[in-house]
Amino acid sequence: MTDEEQNIAYWMQIRKGNKQALFDLYNNTYFHLVRFGLKITANDELVKDCVTQLFLQLWDKHARLNEVQQVRAYLFTSLKRMLIDKLIYYSKTDKAINKLKDKELIEELPYEEIIIRVQHDEELREKLHKAIEQLTPKQKELIRLMFFEGLTYEQVAATTEQSIKTAYNTIYNAIKILRKVLK
Amino acid sequence: MDHQNYTVEDLVCDESFQRYCLGADEEASKFWETWISSHPEKLALVREAEQLIHIISARQGKLPVQLEHLKDSIRRFDLLKDALQPDQVEAQAPVIPIKRNKVKWMAGMAASVLALVVTGYFLLKPATVEPPVVAEQKSDIDGTGIFTGNAPRKTVVLPDGSVVTLRSNSKIVLAKNFNTGSRELHLSGEAFFDVRSQSIPFIVHTDEVNIEVLGTVFNVCAYPDNELTETSLFRGKVAVTRKGHPEQKVILSPSQKMVYSNKTGRLTGTENPLKVVSMLPDPVSHKAQEIAWVRNRLKIDDEPLGTIAAKLQQWYGIHISFTDEDVKAYRYSGTFESETVVKALEALQLSYPFNFEVKKDSIVISK
Figure 1: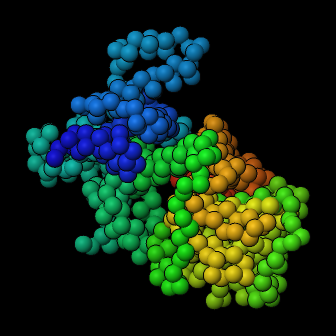
Figure 2: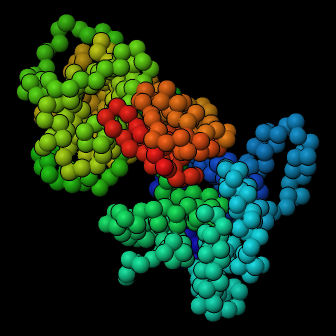
Figure 3: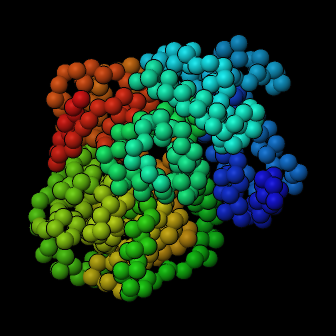
């Protein structure tokens, strides 16, 4: 069964009132949803809260849920709508954010910007900025694939068309630099 | 596998360690938890590696922790829904009497983490009530007492390392032999316990019930002169026994609530409570209001540790001192929410390290 077939099976169970299926679907989609949300807004607390809210809403209206063909796409769309509503609400006075209303205009935040902006500590942000500047584009790409997108070495190597050993060494050296600068 | 000579970089680059940090894989989590607890000397190394992964994963969070948040929200949501349909409350799951096999029961509990809230609503204490047979426990409990008086909160560290925060006008009395063979205390009032996990059971006696746990976090409210005692369980398992009636014992499972009425002397364990007086989620934070009195939301905007410590000292009611001036000047920013002073300090340590030592009624912070 593919991931999506599994999700559809969970979805059908949720509609019947199976709470465990809700948690299973959550486990299956959590990281995908959080990553997707972080690309819209680098506010990790808001994203995590919205993911919880989304599943709470599913549970609330489980008996009235329709059959869906693409569970993940449905969740992504719902999360996006929820995040944008919250962002607009939080910054009613901010005109710049009003363009968010045009939901198609949203640009994905680049990885470097996300990891810097989600840090709460100003000093850490500055250090992280400096640390990232010292990485090569290749190193940044591999760090993103492994730590943000959650790929394995095997998948990283396949995506970037190089050996696992090379991928490992590239990441290892990048981590060494990051650690040194962040310390 | 030999991880003995692992550096921080080795850990960060280890796929299984990464999965442990995100809580994405049960097997990896189990492995690393065991490894860390058997290599305490590696703790600083592990923390640094965790922190680094935390940063470059863009704070995606730990899956099991996030799942617990969801489960808590749903539990409170369900309770709220049930509260709005009082007619259906009768048709709930029956009390589960526990087997006499105590050892088995404890083994099951040791593995679980739980948070427990006990709330008392004793408004009228009828004179007709049968006096509870508590002599055997009463005689044990005549040791050290801790009182809050009118202070809003007071935090103490028990001899076993457990942290207790007491609410105003509350009192705990430790049994004489506390921490040598048994960990028993008597509570009058309300307290939040963060119990150090140990094989010795931890027992809280109130006037009406005993609450037995191994290592856990829970809140007990047992002010005298109330009418009902309620025990709401969020996670894990807990046993509640009626004082003087060891046969009247219930094990609660998550989302079950025990209601004890002093009028009828009945112990009721139901899937959903008869009354949902205290389970209303906070409309803003969606967190349990039962422990709102102790939960401290700390908003720090580039403040020195000295100032932060003063705030913690005032909130939790425990003296905090510093060994040197340097560490006092460390600056922090961020928002933390924590139930105990120890958790709050641990959260701060994550962003910039320092050491602290907890003593009976004070905390000493050093470099």
